Length: 389
Image (cartoon, rainbow, N blue to C red):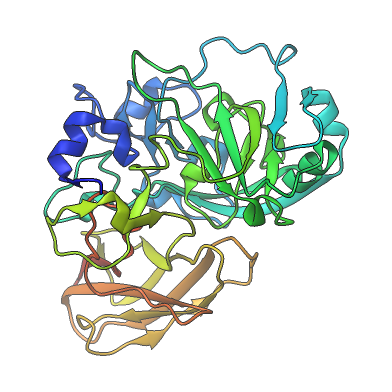
């Protein structure tokens, strides 16, 4: 039996084990202004510069599709320093009838499939965890929705011929691994790999993938945590069982049962983090805003593989809830825009709270559901505003 691993031990033994290699840096968490030093990502919040991690300010989430310059960046290692797309190859091997190698041109000639997907880091909201958990201290903006395009993964695998023994599919990227840090390798079950909407993404919002987002190809596993969608893809390997590696275990795992804040969890009492939780966020008005009596609250809500059934808003600390109006734009794996309008009866401070419910009946909790890695935190969102006299 494996021993119990505390949060401190995980941090000391392998920072990557919790899926968030954080380096103390003078610019770490200093705010949006420092994003101006990164071409094409001006205004983003810098969470780490060693392994580039950029958070989208909440006010940037004002559209169904997020522009590339506003889309968050999550890197577990160094980005590839020199990548010749002309020489790049994607290999398919493992439990297949024949190993194959694809060029970018060959993948582009295959039938292309488009998926609008809300991509969210598993640690989005980690900064809300009390007690503190180690890792990138994302607040709300490690998320974005984009239009991804590329061949279906199942079509790529079909050309190689998956054997009956193939039960999981592993992704390896071209991240540059420093020192003895374990490489970032993840796997997904064959059922998800062969879903019609799982793709080898070559384009994002109609343009070739940028370096920050995995050029020239990345996996796109819709509805699942961002870590499943490996960037700078170079190898796809079909396995007999789930890949055994640091970023599968003990990394990116959730407790099988709820745990008390600060409680350690044994690895054998966890399971892989997969689909996203139901969640909402308020994008307007901003926290601390001074507004007039007519208020329009707006935001987004998403639920991974499920659909958003409703979003509710409270302006009296949760005593009463009113239904928000959902936006018309809708796609299976994408967030829904929502809005709610009301007239404040008197001036003063108000706390706006939003909560979402999905098509399976899941509802956002009213408190943080703590876990040792700060994954999939989906507590109701709130902002405090002041109404002028």
